[in-house]
Image (cartoon, rainbow, N blue to C red; front, side, top):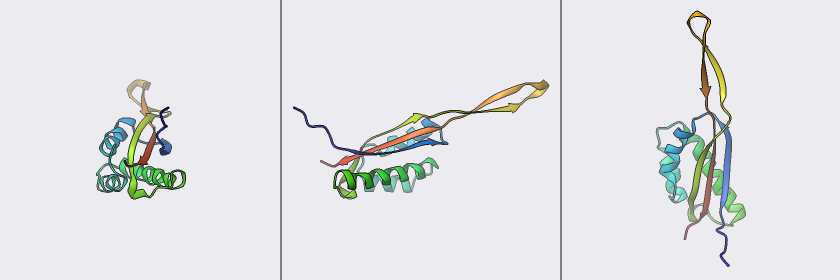
Length: 116
């Protein structure tokens, strides 16, 4: 019988950034140890990196509670960005027309596990 892999996770929902922009940053930290992932996010030029850093620290804190593990012993096992609800706005155009503007949102999840 296989033993399930223990991991802790944290999620932020309805954050005002497109999922593709968040995925670009998440791909950079996937598989890294938590301290190194924090450094990558701290020095990233992307605005979404600040929000992902908060989620990563929350997942590490959850791992301290659930797995009884130190943050230095953890690594980012999985992370993803799903599409959230889209805010629909309209932009007035010529001759009484209107163009739809879609302001996309994301749900970001980060999972950490004990490094092997």
